[in-house]
Length: 342
Ligand SMILES: NC(=O)c1ccc[n+]([C@@H]2O[C@H](COP(=O)([O-])OP(=O)(O)OC[C@H]3O[C@@H](n4cnc5c(N)ncnc54)[C@H](O)[C@@H]3O)[C@@H](O)[C@H]2O)c1
Image (cartoon, protein in one colour):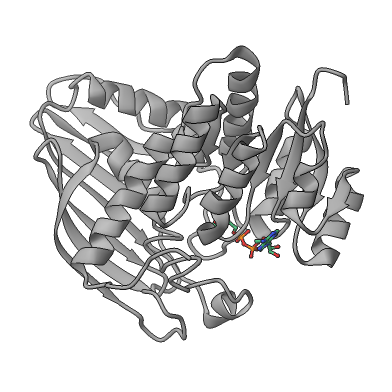
């Protein structure tokens, strides 16, 4: 560690948390100095593996004066509350997706970051693929013409064991169902490409053959603010799990994406095709831990550099709110009446 390194306090040493901790080791200009998990053995193991001080309570970790930023990898419904506590103690915040599931809490999180002039970034690693960024630039420049449709499909497979292993999974308070957890990447890709959703015209959700509160299957028809329409279909019931698909077309052409890769990008009468020749960086359709880490590394570097230079982060709180707004509109249209988020 050098004197100029950004000192990070880390919260949530579970599945994705351990991926983050590995990736932080490779990020220049940053060092995890403290780790926290309310399961003491998880915190202890992470502290030993990464040479960091161990905490089981985030507030105690925040008392360590040299921590400049906090990385949060806890259950989704805790993100805003923990992010607000970290921001209020003067720390920048990086938080896993979704930024939270409760829109009112997300607004308080964004307001706190603004009021304190601190960075707030939410992990959406697919946005950090250069070819996905180029495709978005071209779409925003109007290369596909007037957008008519953008649809997204996430047909994945998770057994009951996956849900039973951690009590927060599939609960309305802390997670939501397949659209919120697995599907939020796809809702983000859809809305990052086609813009915010104005209205959900139809939605149906169902819990099928899994003992959880929230949905394992959901389908919706959406209208974007720009007038385009789209279909959202998500499930964790689909054996063996397919790659995700986001498909967009306008009056001049079409594009198709799978997570961080461009499968096709074609404009009528032009020779352009941005389709990737690279294999995809990881695919969690059947296995939650089969993740590529390239997008996370790029986003963590973006976070560190934004703090050091004062420039904006690429994925800030407001843009990470957009897919959660779409998710909440789907849930409301499907008849979910209670509170989403703790
Ligand atoms: N970007 C991605 O592709 C990706 C992939 C997987 C998970 N995620 C997101 O990451 C988050 C965590 O998911 P996971 O699969 O790693 O879950 P997990 O259950 O494996 O890990 C969460 C960890 O947080 C700890 N924790 C819970 N409450 C805490 C508290 N109050 N204080 C400190 N620690 C606490 C738990 O003990 C656990 O170790 C979720 O929001 C999920 O949506 C993102």
